[in-house]
Amino acid sequence: MNTNASAQTSLKIVGPALPHLPWEDRPADSSDVVWRFSQNPIINHDAIPTSNSIFNSAVVPFGDGFAGVFRCDDKRRLMQLHSGRSTDGLHWTIDPDPIRFIPDSPQVEEISRFEYGYDPRVCWLEDRYYITWCNGYHGPTIGVGYTYDFQQYYQLENAFLPFNRNGVLFPRRINGKYAMLSRPSDNGHTPFGDIYYSESPDMTHWGRHRFVMGPIGGWQATKIGAGPTPIETSEGWLLIYHGVLTSCNGFVYSFGAALLDLDQPWKVIARGAPYLLAPQAPYERTGDVPNVAFPCAALVDAPTGRMAIYYGGADTVVCVAFAYVNEIVDFVKQNPVR
Ligand code: BMA
View 1 (cartoon, rainbow, N blue to C red):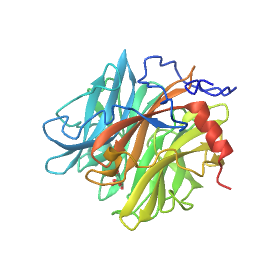
View 2 (view 1 turned 45 degrees about the vertical axis):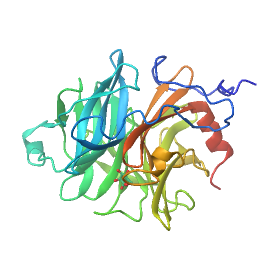
View 3 (view 1 turned 30 degrees about the vertical axis):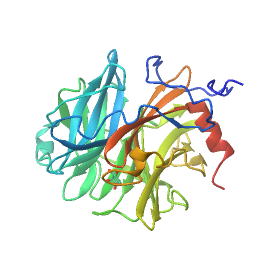
């Protein structure tokens, strides 16, 4: 059997063809559903002169190549967002100047003083790239902005009151509304955290909040949070999410997957019991915050189901792992939380 072929499936993936996405076949001696890029990390902590660390970052297809928003903690240890471009998705040129959002309206100007920004997500939705991030406004909440060109960025109202983290947009309207997952939190190193669903008619007013899922034990015992933009499939939305375990040595961040109902995404169809990837490589175990694998983006080639997951390693570097969407869906269905 060719272990590099994706499993036979009738799964349909909604999305563009992306034949040039970064890719490396599964190692011959591996049966893992998610496998690491052999050249990890792809971005080192000092990729720009001012950076202490670059991690938890989001990328999308853009033009002939790729673009993204990167979390760069600077040498003052302030958390900044930077724009980046790449032709192959692996070698990145990161703008040395941080993003400064332009208020989209006079009302937004009132809240637009940049305190800090981290853990960005980027989502192509209708006609532009939306950015959501953890935005400092009297504590962490979900900042929302957009760009057309990854040069000028515009800011909208924060989606929620503090405290909230891990705001992740769905890539299309659901039942006519914009839709977002988020994780209400506290002002510190939150020891709890459930994923909620919220909707909006206009990307400004968010409501009709619904509980999606919470921590359940093991690698996802303490808190969970949505990762990359959910991937639409004929079996439901495939959500990759991080889960946190509290060990004697502090938090351990791994990631796994769940399938959410297409029309009512707060309904969980299946949730994988085992993790897909836990911090086991040296660059996930050692860094500014040890034992962290934190996914913020995924590139998918819809016709083949090949997928490149971008995640931060140990709050220090950017890494990539590969998978087939249909294999993750099968894995979740075959190894569900009961
Ligand atoms: C979370 C966020 C992430 C970080 C993680 C581990 O609360 O701050 O950016 O990767 O902690 O430190």
